[in-house]
Image 1 (cartoon, rainbow, N blue to C red):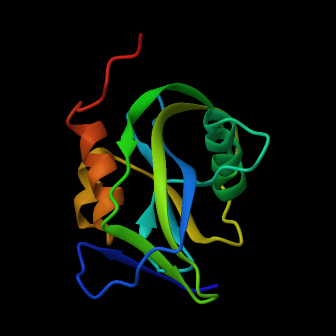
Image 2: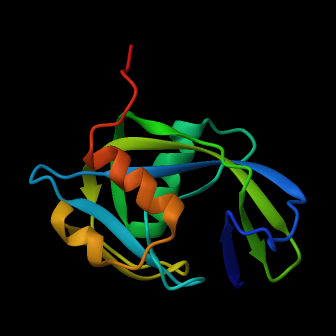
Length: 155
């Protein structure tokens, strides 16, 4: 299914669904970050997706990371909360989604890098390599928040 991202676009279609979601900044011991190249928009992105009924957002983050990248993770913090009503995703089936997303910080604990039906490539990148990658602004903001240390304190 195709997807088009609209952010701050006055011509964007109106949202017709509100969806809780999780994304994940996965950082290994060398400081590299795990990214996937999405099949639906050909952009590099953090692993993540929509929460299912019966699971918590942290469980969603762990599941989505495993499904999309092949890597098992342990959640160690929160990068931030992202709720921009001016950012919607329009899908080919007519859904126009506004997401309420928590971006988690995680460390890898197992698995092997693998593409999924949602990705065409999955790789580890050094933080300095990220700037040259094609990425939607909302994902770049999450990555930049992590790189710049703009994360809430965990209590």
